[in-house]
Amino acid sequence: MKPRALVTGGAGFIGSHLCERLLSEGYSVICVDDLSTGTSENIAHLEGHPDFEYIEHDVTLPLEVRSPLDEVYHFASPASPVDFERIPVEILKAGSSGTHNALEIARARGARFMLASTSEVYGDPLVHPQHEDYRGNVSTTGIRSVYDEAKRYAEAVTMAYHRRYGLDTRIVRIFNTYGPKMRPDDGRMIPNFISQALAGRPLTVYGEGAQTRSLQYVDDLVDGVLRLMKSREIRPVNIGNPVEYRVGEVAAMVIELSGSRGGIVNQPLPADDPRRRCPDISRAREVLGWEPRTPAGEGLEKTLRWFAGRAQ
Ligand code: UDP
View (cartoon, rainbow, N blue to C red):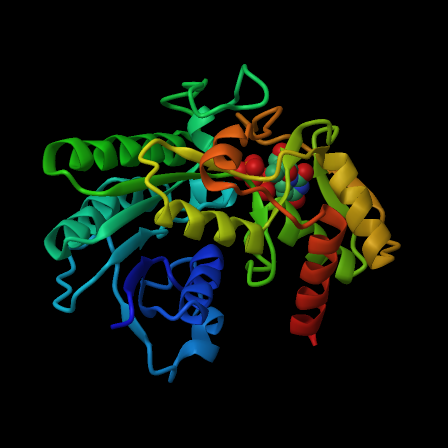
């Protein structure tokens, strides 16, 4: 029998890469998505695959799955900072009711459960790099609180199901990830910079561009996710690329790779924008034998090519 996985948010950027990889590893996959921020385009090539099933459903509403399941990946949530103001209540629901419902599916089917958490649980961190034991510096009322607190709640409810019901759980804390299939209008740094560069428009660098992020190529993330699911690690695990770049440096890389002549324009820094972010991945190295393999230049090149192909 093939192992069977359910992926919530399976038509999203990361979820669709995960579905694809699970299928190639011999799983049969149920993808659940309401297409609020995901797109059917992301999974169009999987439709018709004998081991792929798509269910259009909003995971904040209960879902009964009758078929046997081995693994549930809860990856459904809007995650772009532009969504924090656009659909704040939906984000809170995805992390709270959505996680609850996904946990219930796993519990009913006796499946292993993974929560896609985020580096946002560290807020605007005061400790660098961020180790999993760092408890964060999060505003409970700021613009980002809808995402940060939803994911902190999601981690808490995941651990409660583990302790109370013995559910076999995993928590992955995902740091900035990029790659093909991001929405060009997603609003995040990489899709913005690449779309702007390809259109010959100036790249919008917020603030002075001195804030830092690490850039993880999506294939590296999916590799870490699969290793974590197979491991016995219950504690949260950071999966991210530990090479830290200033946002201004990322803009310069995109300009260099694309040959754009549009230049850069500085725009106001959004409220609560974390000043520094960089994962400590010693736990992932130790317990999963994992580390990212794709250098930023290579990943950005692949992503640029995908965006360029799409624009035609
Ligand atoms: N950013 C930017 N220009 C953009 C979009 C984002 O300078 O067009 C900056 C943003 O202020 C942040 C970083 O890039 O410091 C990463 O932003 P993103 O929206 O990708 O996600 P975040 O890491 O903030 O959740």
